[in-house]
Length: 347
Ligand code: PHE
Image (tube, rainbow, N blue to C red; front, side, top):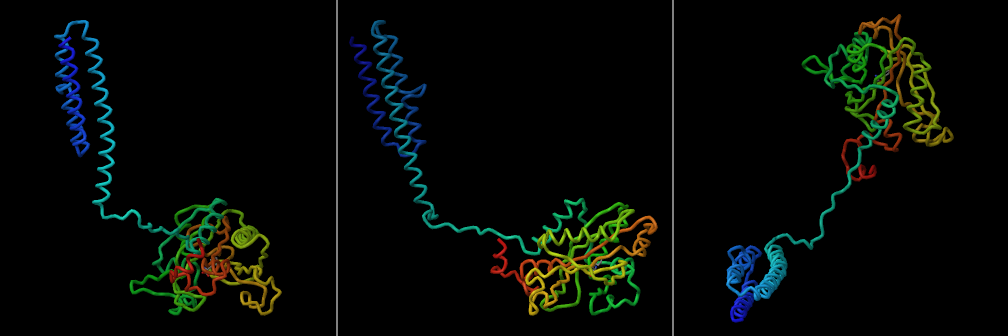
């Protein structure tokens, strides 16, 4: 009996000591080390249990039970103290941290797609869905592509210094996206369908003209393309961007690279022709939005296509003009000033 009660005493005093040590620990790491001193393989509780073997066999179960109770109690006390110490550690970390987490955060504001890009994407989407390729070309262009290959006679007024930015290198800043037609035809064979969006430059500046602006060119070439195809395509474009109930009107016009050529007007969506004072259509009921025509055989010749075999249509539109009409923006410079109050309206 003496052996058992001694063992029990030893265990109980080890437990009391361990609990006192646990409460003195002040970091989770320190606490873990103390736990090892008692419950580890070489710990005090294990050492006491070594004495178990010297007890009479009938006392061993009781002694084992006490040992288990002590071990369980210590493990539980350890876990409890660990939770406390972790909380303490977190509090210390917060106190040492300069960041005041109670300050309100900063909002990241939602951006908006620029109205020009919006119109461009809308048009690209339509033509992409109709199987058109989307192409591009250089803004610094050879006169050959900007003029010659497009059938501009050498003395054509559009080559004049007033419209064209000529560069010392002999290049020009392209005055339209039509040179992309030529480059595209040089590297593709019909049948083909493509659009080419991009920046163009003209020496011109007022509230409806900017020295840099954006156009979208369109070109379709096949063996049997007619003016009807052109007309249907452009009507779809107008319906897609403006409204399906907007009528169109094709007026004869002239471009060196198309024959016949036309300018396309859309019905005034503001007054529908009813207001003689209308500021959008100037009382005419119509608004000019596009240039187009059947590809001039000379352009086909320049790229080595046989004009007896192929026909095609082409068109060109100003993205700024479309966007100004669509969103009722009355000054082209608003597109380029990056005034946040204007851009915010397109969220
Ligand atoms: N390139 C012409 C312009 O800038 C537009 C156009 C393109 C006209 C294609 C007809 C065919 O005004």
